[in-house]
View 1 (cartoon, rainbow, N blue to C red):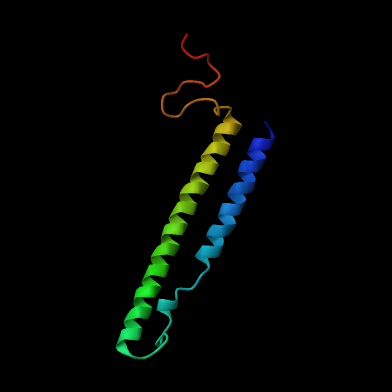
View 2: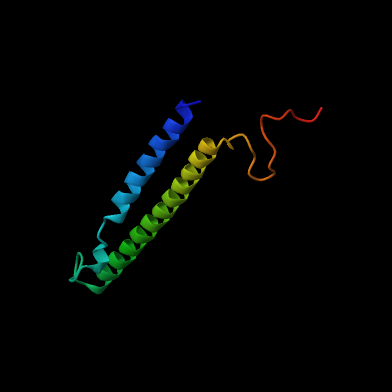
Length: 99
């Protein structure tokens, strides 16, 4: 059973490292000056592409934060000895089922 918390901690570290990598990026759209070709169509395409990349990054970050929270909660339940209790109904998985 000691193997499970170690695996969860390892995954949590991996997720946190990935979050730090995403958080350290500079948004290109915040830099001054044109990106790519200077004609209006190219500028619009660049803006759309940058916006899509930013939205994808935010979505990835959101999913990673959610995963980190769930992993942290799982570690807390393991350490507290509540890992066999269903969070939705409160029934212990160790308890015998209905006959």
